Image (cartoon, rainbow, N blue to C red):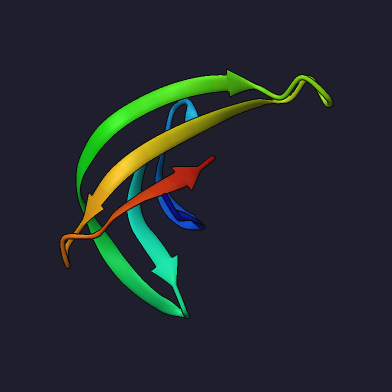
Length: 65
């Protein structure tokens, strides 16, 4: 699974939902969030939110906030 940068809807709780994925300089609309999970990096202690998303072209990618 490819992890790509994303653009998020910023609501009251900061980055909430991915709206676009950026791949090779192009923006692709997120059509569906398939999975959302919070992970803890054991080395840094940082919490990441990982979204598995289906894009407008049918690709499924992971976006990390």
